[in-house]
Length: 79
Image (cartoon, rainbow, N blue to C red; front, side):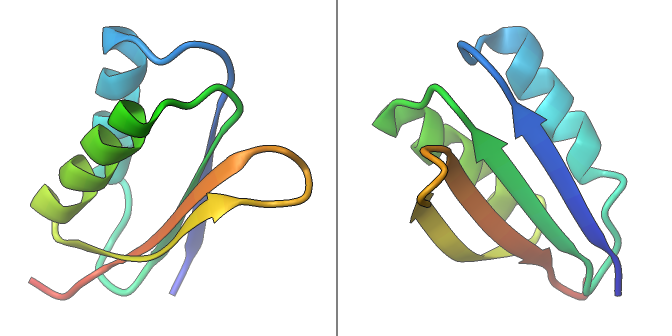
């Protein structure tokens, strides 16, 4: 099992969504994947969570941490 992390800084636009989507393909079954964001709106979170679920991820955590960033933690399920 591997741990992957993607830090997104600044505004989330189409390019960032595309990068997140592409990065999801690197993660294998049973691997963990954490996305951290510094500028986030509820609609951004919903879109990213939907993308994760559509790519067969189980979301285990969403929320802010003391460092002020927003985190989405997920693991990829077996196919």
